Image 1 (cartoon, rainbow, N blue to C red):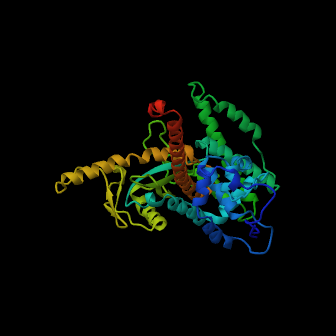
Image 2 (cartoon, rainbow, N blue to C red; image 1 turned 180 degrees about the vertical axis):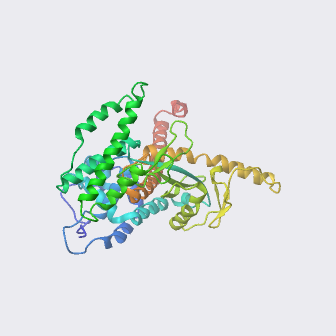
Image 3 (cartoon, helix red, strand yellow; image 1 turned 90 degrees about the vertical axis):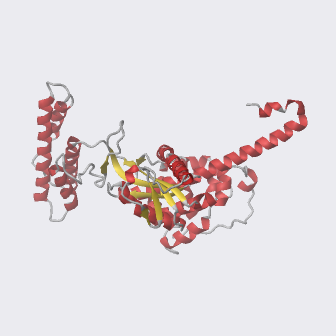
Amino acid sequence: MLSKTTNSGQMGFYSTFEEQLNRKHPLYILANQINWQQFEESFKDLYCPDNGRPAKPIRLMVSLLMLKHIRNLSDESVVEQWMENIYYQYFSGEKSYACGVPCEASELVHFRNRIGEEGIELIFKESIRVNGKDGKEDEATVDTTVQEKNITYPTDNKLHRKIIKKCVAIAENEQLELRQSYSRTIKKLAGLQRFRNHPKNYKKARKADKKIKTIAGRLVRELERKLPAGLYAEDLALFKKVLQQKRSDTNKIYSLHEPYVQCISKGKEHKKYEFGSKVSIITTKKSGVLIGALNIKNNDYDAHTVDPAFEQQQRLTGLVLKRAFMDRGYRGISEVRGTKIEIPKPFNKSLNGYQQQQLKNGFKRRAAIEPRIGHLKEDHRLSRNYYKGIKGDNINVMLAAAAMNFKRMINIYKKMFLAFLYRLLKTFFTILFPQNLYLLTAK
């Protein structure tokens, strides 16, 4: 059920945020720049109009999602800090201080699932609009990166142990009596596996690995015999695939709770393999506004990710880019959806000196996308994705990109405020101490 509308014009006994807060604060300015009404109109159809318990205000939930990724917080932390930060409350639409948490942390999970990828994309689109003309450039830079999933480093032994635990849990839930739980046997085998790198323990550890795999296979087959047909069929099929896969197989399973995780190698010296999903990032060439952020389900060649990435960019901005600068990982394409692709290569003799210099400047500017990807990962929760499934991958990418666009505007508002303070201080200093004016201009 939709939340009840509040009368914003009603006067209270206490002063409002409009009277208390600093109107030059970046969050105060940003709150008045975002078109909150479009979220109300777009998401109201997802709620029942007159039945059930009234929901939390849509603006509140959308703002909490924004603040979470802008400030790099967890669901629990953003809910707690909202109660303590009056600028967070004003950003969320409150008119005066509200004591108490705005909602339970789990409600953010339900809201993300409710609005889905389309709703998150609407937030991303609004973040581009807030940046104004900077988000409407006709040249862009493109690159790919990896968002790692929140899983442990996969090994066969870890997967086999998890299969054993899950099989025992299924038997307990269905009240099935197994021939043996192997709890003591697993404990003994774990001791043999601990120091596998020692020359004397290597063979013992290998035998223990094989024994654990054998036990996992036994439990899976026993459950297949004793469970009714169709019950836990997907889980058992997943267990069997893990037990059958070999080192050189394709489409391997690296996690039981995240079976769609890909093993991606980006040529990093410190991290040979990353387990997650590939992400395509598009930024404007000069200002660096993110105008495209798309999760790629499969581990595709970079050139194959360009078409869906530009399809999203044109859907969000409504513009066809004149040209895009990419690295040599995109070899094999020259034009996609009306956008000319520029890749470093020997210059064509037909180009004059000015055109060659323009290309050189474009390729130099392309390098600026690398630190932006670094900030996306370290500051806006792209380095490790905690959301579940492929849907969670798509949501996390677009929320991180939207947060970076909003943070860019916050930094601009900060610079404007500092420049205003400097001019004010300079005027005041000039009037009182004209002979010491050099102190303000000294470095």
